[in-house]
Image (cartoon, one colour):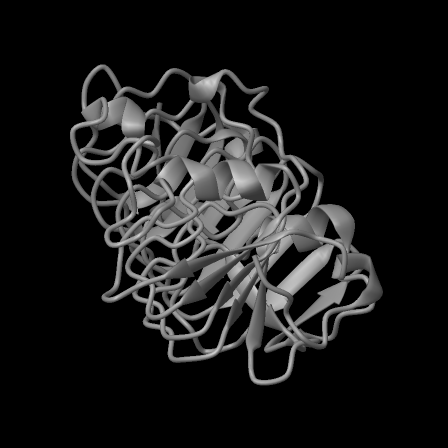
Length: 309
């Protein structure tokens, strides 16, 4: 354990677990353990030791859940802090967000940092590769580090005294124009709030949302609206394949081509798009008056849209 200098009073009493890395390691502080439910521990397990280290991957997650901080000495790999701040049901949790500690990286970080992240902060001293996750930058309170917070966290709990960088919060609307490419924008959002982001995004926009709205003024990658369980995702451009996969409810609007394998395994909800190739039993349906009004409210011409339900 060690103390981080310059920490605020409220953080000064936290335990800090230090991890020394000889080379980048993927999935550190990953609350999903690289989607453990898919590979059943073959790719990563909480009990596995971090290479050349005394701690396991599970030690880091449990330390954060207990309110402690992590300091990574060296470069972190891909998917740092995936779903951080979520008490995942797969591991016996509630599925809700929980308070967690912060993560400090005294090096660089590879892609997809903070995907589906909902709590805590990430501080990085080195470079960060895009795409980022569900994050925006805020003014750092730690000299030499850049600081990042979850988009979902800011919409639910506000920015506090922290100054937002490359974005602004107006009421319940977060406008993002920071020039970065992001994954999982608005992940797990469950309050009546809105994200408006300029530019293209990558994977899983609006994944696991329950409420609110996410609008992307650009193109989006695969799995847009995946596991959507309420709320609205609007893409003012094209999406890649598997849009609305495993969708439970809600609406996805694509002002362009929604790609192949559209709405695979969809349970409820619907997709409005100009073009797309759905997976049966989803099929094309005539627009209702309410659908047309919804499209007009978004500034789109309903005559060019198809409903997939």
